[in-house]
Length: 69
Figure: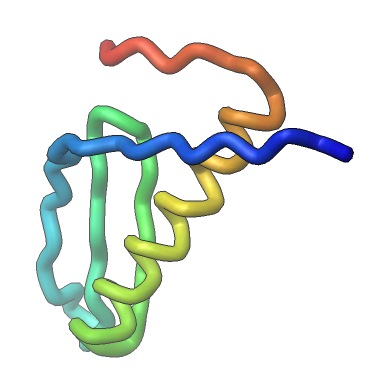
């Protein structure tokens, strides 16, 4: 049976968020080189959480290291 390990990460990742000319919202995270788009502010906030969760899970499964630029 696999052993489950809880990893807690406390940190801050800056995002630049702004409305685009077409009405959608854009979120850019320069340190992680991520860009997201959503129709509303609330959807963008949700997408940021989902994307960071997926990003960190992928790093965990691929055993890659991330170093800030």
